[in-house]
Length: 406
Image (cartoon, rainbow, N blue to C red; front, side, top):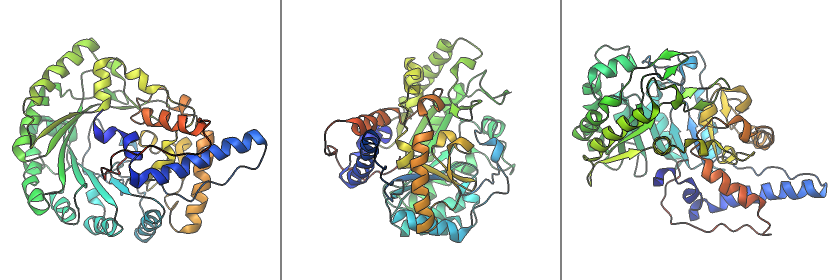
C-alpha cells in the first residue's frame, strides 16, 4: 500500500491520535451503556479530520466516464458566507484537511482562489482535483498553497485526440497541450505544491449507465511520457468506477469485452513501460484498486464491518448536503445533513447527533458489499479498537508525517 492510502498510519500520527482516541472512547462507552441498559452518551463535538468539498456542480466538460454525470450543471450551490462559516467552525473542532473535488469543476466556483486563501488562513491542508481547463485559476490558487498541499489534474489520456473524445470540453481550444503548458508556471509560482496527472483506466466493455466508454489502455505509457515532459511530479493510475444500482461507486471488471486476464495483462505491460520513466523527480503510482484488480483479490476489499467508522472521521460536503463517503456522494441513504450542517455551533451540534445516527443505521457490510473500499483496512482496525476489552484506549503512535488527507 502506498503511504498516501495507509490511513491507519495517518490516524496514528501524534497530531491526530487524540482525535481518534476520543472517537474510540465514545464508541466504547456507547457499547457499554447498551450492555448495562444505561442511557447512551452523546457524540463528541468533533468535526471530521478530512473532508471532500464539492464547491460547485458546474462543469465545462462532458466526460463520457464521469461518475457524477447526473448532478452536473444543476442549480444547487453553496451560500458563500455559510460555507465560510462552516469551514471556520470545522477548523475549530478538528478539521485538518480539505480536498476540493467532485460534483463539478472546482475552479468554476466564483472567487475560487480567494476561497483557497480562506482555507489556508484557517491552517488547513488543501488539495485540488481539477480538469485543468482553468490553469489561470489554478495558478492563482497555488500561490496561497504550501508544502503538503497538492494539485491533481484528471486527464486520462496521452493524445489530444483521445482527450477530446473522452472529456468533450466545451472550449474547442482546450486540449492536453494547453493544459500541460500551465504546469511549469504553477511549479515556478509554488515549487512546494506537488502536481499530479491522474489517469482513470478504461477498457472495452466498461460503461456509464450502459453508455460504452472509450478505451485508453494503449495510451498509458504515452501519458506518462507527456506527464514527465510537462513537469508533473507524478502520474497516478486507477481503474474506472461505475455507479451501482444501489447508488454506490463500484469497480465492475466483469464488464470487460474480452477476457479479464487479457485486459489486466495489457494494463500491466503498459504500466511496466510507464514505470521505466520513474526517477528521483518523477513518480509512477498505481492505486490500491488497481493493484488488487491485478492481484485478483479485489473482492477482499468489499468485506466491511457493519459500522463504517471512517464516516465520522472523513465526510463529503456538497451543495446538496453532507454525505458519509465519496463512494455514496449524493445518495439519500448516505446523507448526514444539509449543506449548512456545520455552519455555526448549533448546526454542528445537531450534525454530531446525526453522525451518531448514521453510524447505527448505515450497515456498511450490506450497503458497501460491492464497493472496493480504500478504507477497508482502517475500518477493521478501528472496529478492533472499539471492541477491545482493554479498559483504556491508547493508540500506538506512528511517525509524524504531517499528512492529514483521508
